[in-house]
Length: 231
Image 1 (spheres, rainbow, N blue to C red):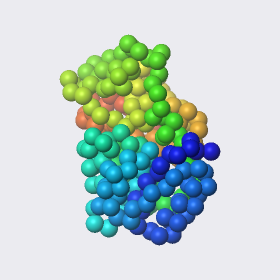
Image 2 (cartoon, helix red, strand yellow):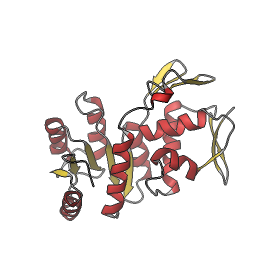
Image 3 (spheres, rainbow, N blue to C red):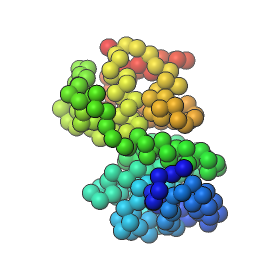
Image 4 (tube, helix red, strand yellow):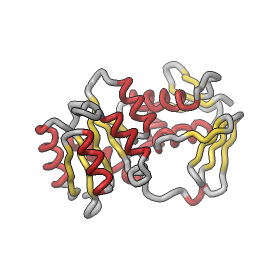
């Protein structure tokens, strides 16, 4: 069951999906607030400061990508976890959304059960820090990762990553030259809690590479196996 009192803001213009989510999230013990367009969603997020936001990309008026961007720019909402809902064929939008700070995404049509599992995983990922990592740093070339602060510096500039992206990068950079399969990287992201399709990892990798302007291919693809960090 959900932690008592956790508030989920659903920003979605499809009344059938809203009704479905209100029922299923309520049944799991969550409180649910809704907004049917981007402008209203922004207002609700600022006024209520929910524990999580489920955000559709295709919205009337202000679309979901712009909503995500504005939420991350506002100090009061910048840390709220966001799961995006996207239609098939919108992979480019997914990459942009992850770059803007969304924590995960789900492609329509989806099952409420999978969404709830994703929500639980994201909420748990945001709780606490790894005390054993205090003071530990990883440096490879111009890339530096401070585990205690969850900070990444590349070519002298701080780079902001989602928690999922950070965990993938930290795992690869801490083991230069070692090849990790998509399943191993997924387990690092979710702790084995959620079954996610392989493409999810590929999208995160694309986002990491773009943020690092990875012309030197720090993160390398091992065809048919997975990914590794250049040693």
